[in-house]
Length: 555
Image 1 (cartoon, one colour):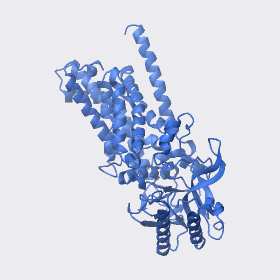
Image 2 (spheres, rainbow, N blue to C red):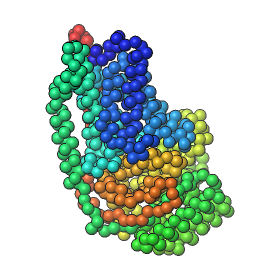
Image 3 (tube, rainbow, N blue to C red):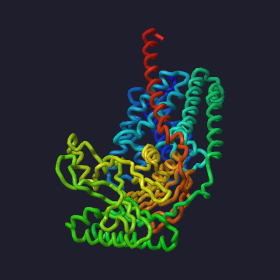
Image 4 (cartoon, rainbow, N blue to C red):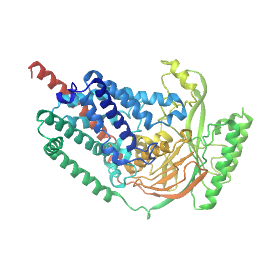
């Protein structure tokens, strides 16, 4: 380790160039491994080497600046990876990039500590720390799943199947291990080469790899088991009872344009629905995207304080009641109640409304699900009293603040029992798991990524959605405003998908089965992630105690 930090042979400028190059490479590899600006479906093989520069960088730089490189890595990686946030609002990319900069500003010193405290197995502890961090970053108010390593393998059928055992955390661990092992070998080789300059660098690396052959063999055996399991776990669901669906994609951001845009979008949605039903008369359920219809349906029907909105609601309800199948519709639903500031008024919920013709359409009495996990800063900010300035800034930034729902609602349609996570919610494994444990045997997601104007953004979202099906072995459908509207089977395979950025629809079917045996993930949730986080804490605490003891004894 002391040799890696010894840069006296390099000038300050040379050292700066070296570390800048390593930092830039780490940012690029991280971005390329996931769906990105350059390759919209991602380059999954990059994930296996994405963290080699990171694990080596923390060894090279001194303690006094390691935090700075973590800050720069977090900001750079998420500026490049989530560049599309700038389309929504400059503050969006600013908040996310600095949030991750601050997080990694803390993580980089921990990675360095792992290398310092554990001379021979530092790379292994770095692996544990990184896997624990990936889990912890998804927790809490600002939890964010974008960038979790496993999602790079959304389109790798064999390996994604192990998610039904330990969620995405098991697959992430399998992938990150390669970066940790290689970086450990390089670090050991660097030490050996510095001590024995007669040996070539290649010979030192080969010798270091030979010493660490046992862990690699264990990883190889686990990797092979994962592939075998992936082949065996995939099933043919064509013989199961099928639910026929029509998924509508109107290709517009429904919030833009006011009442004239709402009229246009409603006309588009009805026209596309009619086309889909004519194309597939066996359809049993029609799904519109998140907040596809903006005026508050039950609110304006009941109060009628805005004539234009009431007439639009009336037109929608007349259309729905004339159909032969239920409709699932995203809506800005409101109810009278007390707001968080104590005032009485309209309490807004980002909601899903399920209408069944001749039953609950006129007057509107839809079955309702209210989004439970709202997007931090743009849909929900519970600290308006503590930080009124920030809250006011968010309100002026084209945000839509809602109250969170509390119940994991399950809707019934014949044998199908489906739940409807809204947009951001299908990026979280615990939410789909909660729905399935409540009785759902299918996931119907309503999303709106149209504001991003980015195919990479939509693929990033899709890359997470496929894992929700695999984790719980249930099918999913996604109706989105602009893409990727699709059907996903319980193996995580996308069986049908609409062209992005086009007014269109997808028709098809999903298998409906009674879930007699829940997957390990459905039963135990994110236990693998919790174990990694706990193991990282224990390892670092134990290492720091051992380091103190060594210093006391002068070793």
